Each structure stands twice: as C-alpha cells, then as structure tokens.
Image (cartoon, rainbow, N blue to C red; front, side, top):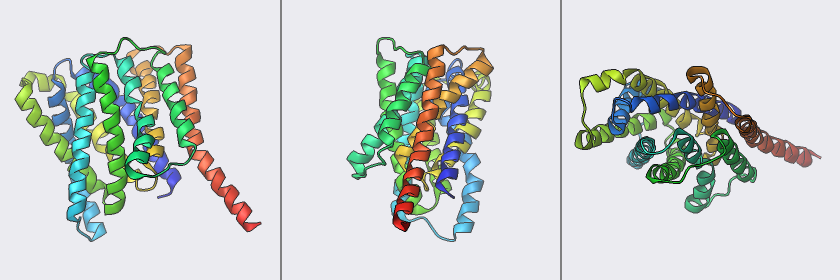
Length: 299
C-alpha cells in the first residue's frame, strides 16, 4: 500500500468516526458509558475475528510474545481513551468535547518526539496548529468554563495520541494489523463490560434502547474504522495519521447538519477550510519535497 492510499484510508476512518459521534452522544440517553464501550467493542471483536483468521493464514507466521504484549497495551490505551471520552461527554458539551478531543493532533507529534526521539516532517507542526485552530472554529469558536468533563476529555486526547503511537510501533513490527485490532477490541470489550458490571446498572430495556448506536459503533466506528487506522499506520507516521484522523471533526459537523438539522456558522465553515488545507499540506508538502530532492540529485 502506498502512503497516499494509507492516508486516504485514514480519511475514511475519520469520516466514519465523525458520523459515530452522534451515536456516542445519544447512546447515553439509555445506557451507561462503560457498558456502551464494553458492548460496542464486543461487537467489534466479532467483526475483526474472521478478518484476523484470514490475515493469519496469509501471513503464515505467528505473533511473537513481545508483539502480543504490545497488542494488549495498545488495547488498554484504547480503553482508557474511549472511557475518558465517553464519561467526559456526560458533564461537558458536545462542542467542548469535539474541540478538546481534537487536541491529539498536537499531542501526537509532541509525544513522538518525547517518547520515540523521532522528529516528524517539519510540515506536521504548522499543520497540527492549523488543524487545532480549524477544530476550534468548527466547534463554535468558544469554550465554556472548563469542568471535570473537559479535563477528562483533555486526558482522552493524550491517551488517543499514545494509542496512535503504539499502533504505529506494533502494527509495523508485527506485520499483523488486523490481529492487533482483534486483541485491542477484545481488551476493550472485557474491560468495558467488567467496569460496567462494577459501576453501572444494566437492563434489557437499556440495551434495546441503545442497540442501533451499539451496532453502528461496534460495526463501523470501532470495527472497521480502527482496522483501517491500524492497517494504514503501517505506511505512514503517527503524527501524519493524527492530522488525517482530525477530519472526524469536519465530518461530525457535516453529519450534524445532514442528520440532526444543525447549522454551521461562518466561523465553522472557515474551520472546515483550515482543516482541509492542513490535510492537503500534510499530504502534498512531503511529496513535493521528495520530488525536488530527486530532481536535484539527477541534476
């Protein structure tokens, strides 16, 4: 897979997540956030299982013990990110949550430098700043006073960044991105259901009421989108992936207009344009720089 195709796959994942933001919010009208996470990732585990078996047959190799541990750690990071985001949505606005979650586009390159001692391409820094400004404008151009839910969502953004970095490491080293998806989904499903059993009530009516959201999030937002992310990150860097995945804010606004009848302000349209430019810059500048170096080398 080429880097361009990988980035397009990440863009598709952002689209699916943007549509799923509505499901995440409405599911909690009947179901607790921890049970929602557990059930959606149980569905995602069922989606990933046959794909992982096909991948195993094609690869003809087993996953090393070190990779298995890495898969589990990635799943723990994913659960922590999903849980803080979902719980935070109970006590913050969708506007605040959308903006604060999008801060992972800034945290990812910072953590890449701190944890891996790798410097991303220089365009990542201005693109991350542009994407953050775009998300801010798209979310309404203002934040209410920060409360507990907002602080949880900021923590969620850090955890999403850590999850992206772990995916970049272990999907590449193992060569088994779908197996990674399967393990992290299973870890999230088990931890979510266990935490829900300990801390939240559950009834058949609650599950029935949130069933459409559980199925969408499980099949698409969790199942397909995270598999797309894991496959694509074998061919691109975590900071670059964060820029493309930040398009979820753009798609969330679009689906809000189409499905919920929401409106986008002029500042919001400006935010959409800025995010789009940031994505284009992230994709085109490295390619143009590479072409220029090849031209100079040939000359």
